Length: 435
Image 1 (cartoon, rainbow, N blue to C red):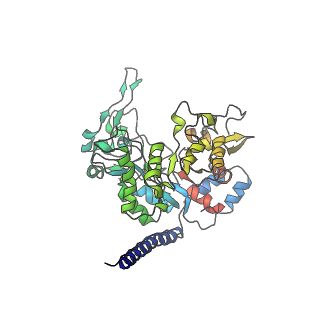
Image 2: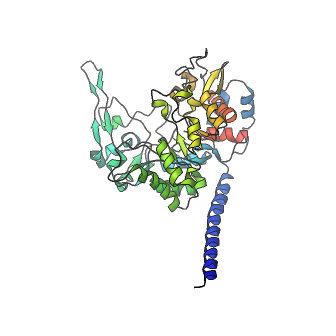
Image 3: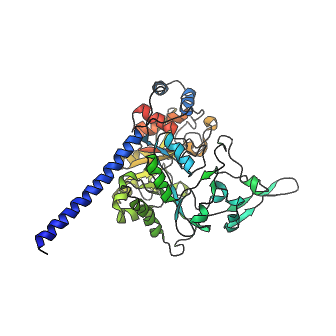
């Protein structure tokens, strides 16, 4: 075959491939844009939170948007769906989050006994997030149900326990389970009692029949809903490699399933709290790595102090040098108090100084804020105060939700925030003109 003909054929093939690629990307973009233009339904909660705010220019601004038409925004990220009231990582939870305007939805990814990927927050949380203990699969659990033990005076000697992992069962068996609210009763004497325990500020109203999803099914659903995707590669609870399935195989498999579904890398923010996973993607999957998210979970390290850069390993500069683009700490690490106001933390300022983008978590996961908001507000409620500051706590009502969000969005400039009830973030973002 003449050389020029070969070159011409090769050029034609390249043009065809480029055209197909452009069509897939453009078509997907057009579909997402059409979905973004659909009006969303927020329900009463954002309006309730605004009413609870102290008088301020922010409250006035938010009140002025009450009659607006609200649209889907990427700034609003559905944390496990809409898990404030729906069983997490279920089809129903994801659909509710999309209806509330979440532009991006999260599937936390774990693997089954046959090394298939599924949406679960933890590899070993089936006992608290599904009905497995009341099915025949209960005898497959790593640690079968054990009742609580009490002494003769009624004092608890040991709580009720169980541990059921996705790696205990096959993907087919996983699909027979139903999702429930993530909770358990440590005082339980029966399986039925153990499966209760939902906090009073959540609800079991939608928890009777949650539809569990594989990772592939989540991709299909999110595509149908018109959202983008932010999967998290969860740290395995079992030793790796698992039956010759290595951590690198695991990290690659999550990417491969997006490629198989023809999802453009630009629509996926793959996450991990293990920096080695991020570096693997940077080395092997640069397209997806360009917006990979390093979840900063170093707060569990006793040598780590988010207020002391000398304890940060890797440092912010090192992350940038390694081509990490996005960091995602819990929101309390980004916030502090000064002059009785919420301000950006040193950690937040340092991240932005070196050019890291920031995503944070998790709004609407703390229950009523009248008692300070617990773990997610610890730098603002006295639980983890700045030793150099005289002020310890400024969180005392549900309206503080929008005040904290405002600092995260406007003073720090986060890309987006996970929320257990995306309507709150969707309202704020639309009101402030954030896409």
